[in-house]
Amino acid sequence: MNANRKPDARHINTVPFLDRRDMLKRCGMGMGLLGANMLLGEQQAAEATQSNNPMLPKPPHFPAKAKHVIHLFMNGGPSHVDTFDPKPALEKYAGKLLPMENLRTERKTGAAYPSPFKFSKYGECGTEVSEIFQHTAQHVDDMAVIRSMHADVPNHEPSLLLMNCGESRLVRPSMGSWVTYGLGTENQNLPGFIAMCPGGYPIKETQNWQSSFLPGVYQGTYVNTEHREVEKLVENINNHVVSRQDQRKQLDLLQELNQFHLASHQGDPKLEAKLQSFELAYRMQMEAAEAFDIENEPKHIREMYGDTVQARQILIARRLVERGVRYVQIWHGAGQPWDNHDDIEKNHRRLATQCDQAIGALLTDLKARGLLEETLVICGGEFGRTPTVELPQQGANAGKINGRDHNHYGFTTWLAGGGVKGGTVYGATDEFGFQAVENKVHVHDLHATIMQLLGFDHTKLTYRYAGRDFRLTDVHGNVIHDLIA
Image 1 (cartoon, rainbow, N blue to C red):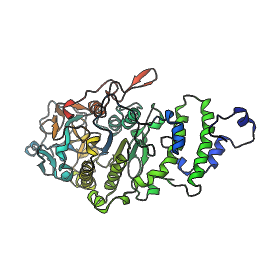
Image 2 (cartoon, rainbow, N blue to C red; image 1 turned 180 degrees about the vertical axis):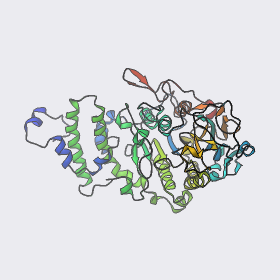
Image 3 (cartoon, one colour; image 1 turned 135 degrees about the horizontal axis):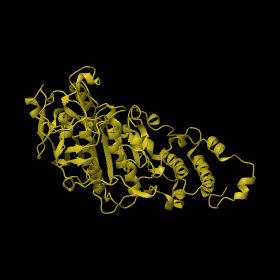
Image 4 (cartoon, one colour; image 1 turned 120 degrees about the vertical axis):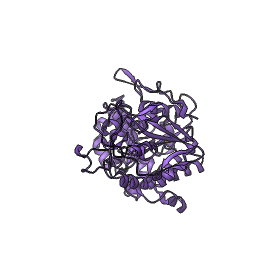
């Protein structure tokens, strides 16, 4: 069949032939299982359909300071008072109830629990950071530490969705989906939005990187980074049965058949996303294997990052943005590893050991390659933890009195690179670290600021759905200009 002419409906309907379902089953397209997101195969085919490619790079509203995002998600809620928000006043009240008459909280709290970790000043700015993040702390002069974050509720599920999608209850597109919707991506051989989480899905699973009512092409592509081998990291990356040339011929035929089918289903986003996925799957065979294989890095670079699962996926993230991927989210494990209701000294130290060296290496590496100024690095969890011990009768901490409960009233998130005003500490919690009291920053404000760094007026990057214009920040959010250089 000639790929340059439109299919004749009478010919297709009358000649005995495989139907679409059988055709898809039998054509041997191993990469079709990826179900990812982008456009067309070889250069000739890409040029023929370029105007229909939703992932081509697009200009933002105004000149952007950041072009890429690496989002380090500390899943479960790390304790700000043990990492980036020192509270020496807790020593005075150790083992005693805190005087917090003005604090409204849904949960009963125990006695004050001073951090078991030592804080020191780093950099020219003198920002204080915990000993468990001493590698990351070497870069405080490039970081803006927000110590006055707050969210809506002290529960993982809604707080995860709020941080990732801007809405804690209803199904909404993720931040990575909004970014790729607004900017497209620079590399048409790789997904524009990749979410890496070792060991399976986190709580709320794929909802954390969903596209929701945005076209499916903008949904994040999940990679399980517990694997080392490229063919396990990206399943079906190579077709060992059909040659690349024959796959291209199959795809050209499928494209013609599918376009004919699409003509009678105009505006079907699921069908359009499926067509895009076949093409991206083919293109990924040329580049994904190389991009995900950190063995291609020099030995000294791999040693700089370290040999933990977190180190490997953080190094992969640098390789991806270096190749033009727009948004990379790195999850610290499935479940909620930072949700330390007990043994916080042991567990937080262990978790930080898994990622601190690699985070420091990432910032060093990006800066050395000239990528930090155009890559926004975000690091934090869905909320923080209480400056008090969790009461054993609440049943979540195995009866131990050495952990902390959830705390959405005040926590820390830091930003680096991508136009961020380095050496900045913005906002503050109270003297104990229980709630944000100075220059409070809601999650919506953080999202508005991130969009500003990427070149968007967050109130104008919208998508029409169900009779209204939606946006990442819904009807909220203020840009924190003090965080922008």
